[in-house]
Figure 1 (tube, chains in turn cyan, purple):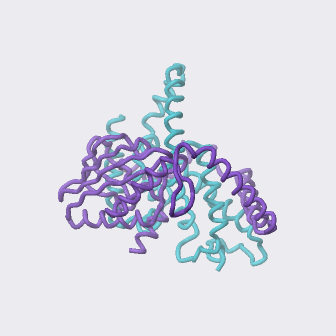
Figure 2: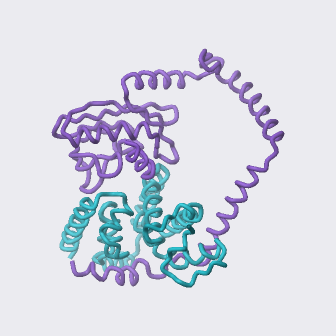
Figure 3: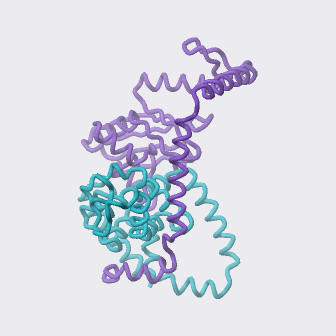
Length: 183
Length: 217
């Protein structure tokens, strides 16, 4: 069965080439996959590279897509696995240290305007979300932003349903505390 | 947490505003896929003679280099007939002893850390199960990172896990007291001195290999 035989969009025709189909998949889900990758690495250039890798994997693994899951969840699963693996890599750890040093150097020379903008932005919800530990951040994003069900999140992240539930509860508590503390 | 219900709008208006997976990104994916396919095809078509010739040249070069470089450092391995360096000899000894004791040997890669040896994962999963059942255990994990050799110990006394990390690439080298193994990977959670929600890495693995090992058990 082909990857797109199960897609939610009815406008795919049998005459479409694999390239055309992938183009359609990327048009439909490109942004969502990119945003998901961004929540992991918090850096746009890197997130774009990772999203490209995700679609490349989808291209390669198209034949293994069984259609039991939605195409969206299947893509998220590839994305979550790829981004988590990347975060564990020594390359990422090294680049994070370099980035922190650069930010520190840059931070010492911030203008008054930049500091004012930062203060204004500081209390925005997304800032608190991005400060959460990864395992809570991904659950919050998939549940509230991507609007996946708990079962779908459990499948995507390969974790027990009860674990996902408790992570979501804990994440909400942490966010509540962070917002209270920030205000 | 009312704000969370409107997270989609909030994110689109703020952090995601002006960013997207655009046409150039899509074009790059198509190009990368095409060149990948092309590479596979050319590899398949490469004539056998050429491969054989290049293999012969490589073997000759390898023989010459190893004989020059390792003459003063290593010795001949009688089982394989190859010359091995002192570091390799030391590593072989560690592997031999570790295998005898049934301990894990993890080969870390400097660029891409995950070490996905199914045997290791199965062993670690067994430890995880022991911890879940409240059975105490103590073991040493050996790590090879380039020429360096590290040894970490992990012990469960029926109440908590004591993990001594000596590998800087895995996290701060020190002794951690942890509550349990993390849910889906070989990591420890609830460790002292570590920020809440963050786990301590024991054996780096990819999630797909982890699932494979879990299914095999």
